[in-house]
Amino acid sequence: MPRWFGSSGIRGSFQDINPEFAMNLGKAVGKVFIKKEFSFIASDIRATSNLLKSSFLSGFSSESGSIVDIGLAPTPVLSFISHYKRTLGIMLTASHNPPSNNGFKLFLDGGECSEKIELQVEKILENNLNSPMSNKDRLSGWKDTGVISHASNNDFIDKYLSFLLNYFKINIKNQKIVLDCANNVPNLVSPFALKNIGKFDLITINNELDSSFPGRPSEPSAVNLQILKERVIEENAYLGIAHDGDGDRFAIIDEKGDFVNSTALISCFVDHLDYSDPNQNKIILTSDCTKQAKEIAEKRGGTVIISGIGKNKEYFDDRSILFLAEPNKLIFPELGRWIDGLFPVLKLLELSEGEPISKFIAEYDYRKILRKAFKITTEDQLRTKNLIKELPHIWSEKINEISNIDGIKLYFKDDTSVLIRFSGTEPKIKFYIESSSRRKNENKLDEIIKKFEFHDQGKDC
Image 1: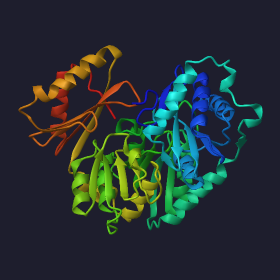
Image 2: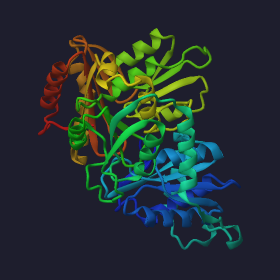
Image 3: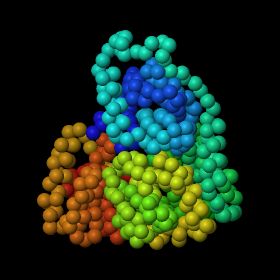
Image 4: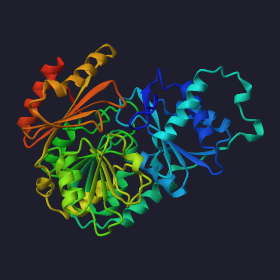
């Protein structure tokens, strides 16, 4: 298992992800990806991005790596460039983490790099971090250093937008949409797409770039989107759209001001895929998706594979895949191999054809899911891990089935299931409870809180 790379790149506080770390990471990435063509790098608006980027570029170019810095851009734009240039892309972002955090994501030919590549980078990175920087034989000769160049982000953003605008045909007119870009780089793309793809009255909130994220926390969870919910109702809007900090995730608020469950959106998209090609009918769903999505895909003729959270990237090279889904992280191979927070929004608008979102999505929301995260200290981790191991024995009379694909997932005889796993990016333990009703989920959560001796109700995740 990688030490630095989590389920979605490297993330951490400035104490850990500092200039020295960034330079050593740059050297490691440069050594793994020795190639003639230029790589590309971009960042979101975080306060430490320029400092860390400069350090990374120094390390990368010292290993003969040539790279183009396009400045500020959402992660999907960087992925798009990596895909169409068939090269390496590096994104500086900590996604939905607090503004004090930052990190790096690596993309190759559009998709996040595999765990195998991440391990290769980590091996060199560990050696760099543990060796003195004065060691001269670790540096390229001055004639072999790479070229660092800069390009405007406008050209690359325009190409990405042009693709999307030509791809979709949206026939909704005279409707209001409220867009929340989280004071970050989605504001460079999403407003322009929505203004040009349909005749919408677009209302924006949190649209000024600000590294302190004053409008709301970056994660587009239900609890963080109260202002958006209220604005949708106030404006009598068709829907509300929210992004995370780097633009690869999204959330939808329906016309009633209600948060649309990401698992319901997955079931909706699964139901509207084209399964006519028998050579491209695989659906990859992570273990925190509801069983409704699986049932729909199989009924439509798809072959479903369940993967671990953050592991969908391991399937990128399989050309028989039609759709990859993790709640809030959707990959449409018809676009490319990356998670995109704008593409599914436009697809939803195209599919709904103006029907109220609450009505359009209702049939895909019969399975309810409750997602809660609890912070745990280093001291609590061992106790928590031991308790998790004991749960199948403690609840043996209540359980029908156990899955260890990702953490542990317990399927209970009362038609509820509980997935328990440690976060790949933060010191948290997460619980994903699924059943046919919210009350069942809440009762199961109360049981879990008592069993694990948590002192609060956790936070939505």
